[in-house]
Every structure is written in structure tokens, then in C-alpha cells.
Image (cartoon, rainbow, N blue to C red):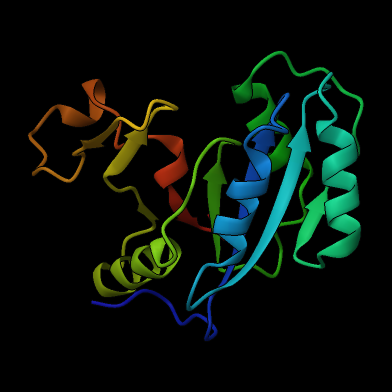
Length: 171
């Protein structure tokens, strides 16, 4: 089974919510912009910050055409409201898929390509994967979310962290 036809390479909009993220954003943006096999655009919404995040994002967006910064200045009060703002205000037309990103994630280079292939092979509308959690101490932990699902799992267990989600843009 395959999903509806998608351009090659597929166009993916990555919606990134940030707040006081200057410490993580350089590595995070680099890992997204280095995605292989997809055409990626990052749309950033910054919850009013005090660490220079807005200025850094604005400067970086002026240098990188694949980075779009939504207007700054609003206080969202949390990641969920910031993601809702992204989904409401970002122009997602012209994209095949939408993915979510926190400011402190580092993506493997073929993350989006693997998601795209699974979506095409299965005909699914959305995708979520395992994740490797990491800490400043260097500790890492693989969080397995790809186990077979049971009847009521959808009610009690999240598919995985939001940063692993990739969904069809036309939903």
C-alpha cells in the first residue's frame, strides 16, 4: 500500500516552538537543516524570551532561506500554546508533511526520510518513532515506542514524543 503521490523529494515543514532556547538552537537547527532526502523548511515561533533567542532566530532567518520566523513578542505560556500558534499561523500550504520540534532536540540525518518511507509504504497519515533521550551529563536512554499496540493503548499511551511526529500536511 502506498500513500498519495508526493513530490520527490517530499517537502516537509518543521514547526519549531522555542522559549529561552539560545543554548540549544544552533545544534538543533543544524540537525534539521542537514536532513537527507527531503526538502525541509523550519518555521519557528518564539515565546517571548530573555536570553536573546528572538535576535538569534531573526539573524539566522536572514541568512538561511529555509528558516521562517513568525512575528515575535507574544507570551504563550507553554509549549502547547506555542505549537498551536505555529499550526494556526504558519503557512503550511505547499508542503507534503508537517513535523514538530522542540528547541532542544537533535535529529538524526535520515529521521524525516525514514518517516516518509514508512508513511509511503503503509499509507498511514501519521508517524511517530522511538527516541533517544539525552542529558547534559552524557547519559542517553533509548525510549522504545515501536512495540506492537494492544487494544486500548491509544487511550493510555502516547505514540511517542511530539518531536517524533510526522503527519500529512493536508489533514
